[in-house]
Length: 170
Image (cartoon, rainbow, N blue to C red):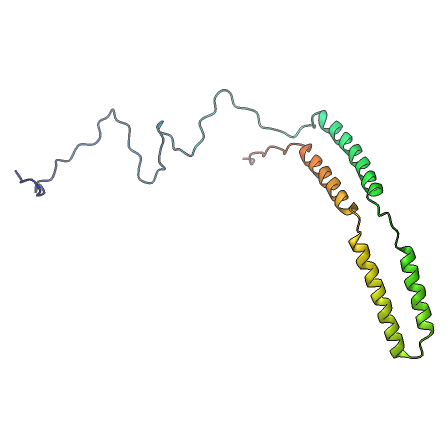
């Protein structure tokens, strides 16, 4: 008999294996199992008869109707965006005035250096016009982008279901 605190020099007797009524233990390489003995990451077994695989059949009857209704609404929205967001002011008069002034100034020049100066003035006038147009830009582009995105979302939401993957032929 050994004293407390010192290891027992005699090894314990080896057992003949686990009792026959106990379940076999998982080997070290197997995944951890849950309370039911199945690995935790596997889904539970299906209940009831197996379902037939999904196939891509004809679209349900409501999808084409929804597409036609949304297409009509998008067409109306496109017309409203194009006509409703059109700029109120036309800059044609300003462009014509810049071109006339350029012609008058070029007619009074006598050499290349003077023509360069006149062309600089014309360039400045056109850049001022472009800057003003940019400040007063219309919102048609943004409206048409929204209409296009709504159309794309409609196509994606009312599209046909994906065909079921078929098992490889044996």
